[in-house]
Length: 171
Image (cartoon, rainbow, N blue to C red):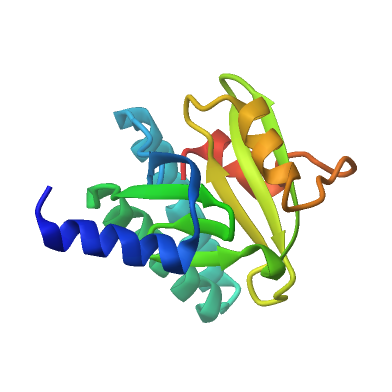
């Protein structure tokens, strides 16, 4: 390892703290959609567009068109790999650092193969939750590490309705 990289690693440890565990995950799950999914989606959006024009609800038509455009653009985008690191000072997610004093609590939902996620509730009201896929990590080890720094939530710890609908409709 070149000398510059060693200096960079030492500076990173000074800023973020000593690493306890790290892993990587895809930025988003790329769903496999067959021809049937596109046909049904096209028919539903077409029917809703016709309805919006008959009811003179042009804003709804614009929202539908934007939604279809975003889903289409998202289909052609490849997910980036995001590196996550739990340290003794906070949690590094990609280029973002979340110190423990800015996080209220955490909980883990581990129901393979459906859900393997780490949730953290931030004190900031703008973005109240951070959701990290655990991939193949041991949830007990992560719970043990985080319990040293954060309280664990034990109530209301289930996937949100939007997450469940996103999986169901592959969006």
